[in-house]
Amino acid sequence: MEKIYKVHNVDARLINSVIKEKLVDVTITSPPYFDLKDYGSEQQIGFGQEYDEYLNDLKVVFKNVYDVTKDSGTLWVIIDAYRRDGEVVPLPFDFSNKIKEVGWKLQEIIIWKKDKTVPWAHKGQMRSIFEYILVFSKSTEFNFFIDRVRDFTSLKKWWVKYPERYNPKGKTPDALWDFGIPVQGSWGNGYIDHFCPLPEELIEQILKITTNENDVVLDCFSGSGAVLSKAVNMNRKYIGFELNPDYIEMFHNYLNNTGEVKRNDFLFEEQNTLDQDKFEKLIFELRALKYARLLYNELKKIGLLSENLKISVEITNQKPVKKNALLQVKYNILFSEKYDEIKLNKEIIKLTLKQPLSKFGIEPIFYFTTLYDIFESKVKQKFVYCYSNKVTHKFSSRINKNEINESPKPIIIFSNIKVDLNEKDYE
Ligand SMILES: C[S@@+](CC[C@H](N)C(=O)[O-])C[C@H]1O[C@@H](n2cnc3c(N)ncnc32)[C@H](O)[C@@H]1O
Image (tube, rainbow, N blue to C red; front, side):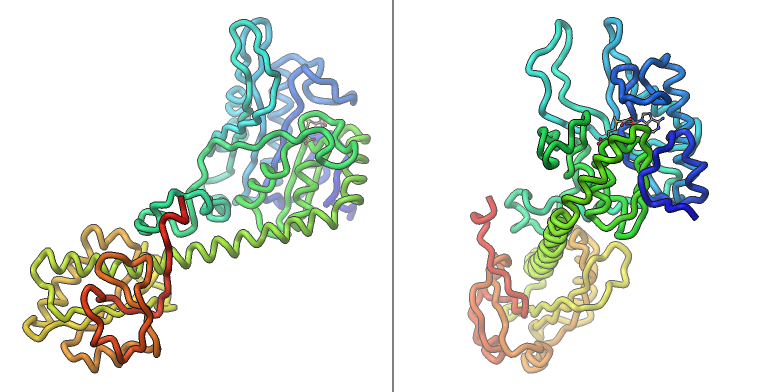
């Protein structure tokens, strides 16, 4: 069998002559412009064509892409409108409608803000500083690993006090993507004399959202190979189609010269995932502690607060059983004899089903006791961090567990969780 994972110097309308099965996980491509640019080969799509002919050719290409894409796969097309004969031609929308005819479903319209462009505008024109990224799928079930690209570094400082409002993996990215276009030379000496290379970060973002290592990435108009090089760096397989052999050669030279270095860059990037895991753990810890504090407040509101109330908090390693719960937490509660345990239990369960507690994604497991010794025996660690009934993002002291009983109010929460955050550090 001829090698398939390479750039084929074959017309993209003939993809099905090269790929015979559904093996593509994602296609990322920017089609040749309509009639604006000569990419220097005879069968090229776009240059010298009528608009209808151009759209029909693109339909043929993307029908082929559809046929070789896995059912879970997606197609990402970077495309722009342009001006002709004194008006705007809405190519992204015409294109989208055209390829719908072969089965592609439009899922997202992302605006890619490119920043760099000509500093002047013609009469009646705004400065054009963006392109469209259209995302299509074959079905409604498709790979979209959005958690991997959540932003957890630029959250407002409020997450320290309101951990229940923040997704533990970070903020969902919005549909306005800000990636400056690469300046000449940033891809290495003379690699990109080619037009409109896509920024590496943009391609990386798409690959993270759509693929795992060893998945298959296709660019049916691969040009200088920006998409495919990134796929190689990120340990994905690649298939390209490109009519101009000079571009294919450029891509090979680039790979030979930079592969090793870029791969190391990617490994460095993986550090980010570790940081994201740490952030998630911290949000969970903050939630578990704050939940105990709010429980205290709610009990106070309904007149069920005992003088000697103490709560110990421990996150279990068990997966929660409840749907929508993110973590399971043990709350061990010491309360006064004057309350009936069954009633207290019932009231607490009611509270957990209502706001604010219901918003924490916590599956609580409660233990109640009126006996201090039993309470203490349920605390497994020798030392515990203490929190007051006002602040649970900063521990106030660390004590031996047999000192819990002597802790003066307002210290009511005891845990093996250590958080020591100062909101001012997160502005
Ligand atoms: C907009 S460029 C792609 C640029 C690419 N994304 C990059 O980063 O360099 C479009 C490419 O499609 C190629 N092309 C045009 N018609 C083609 C066809 N029928 N089959 C395969 N490639 C074609 C052109 O040679 C050109 O390199």
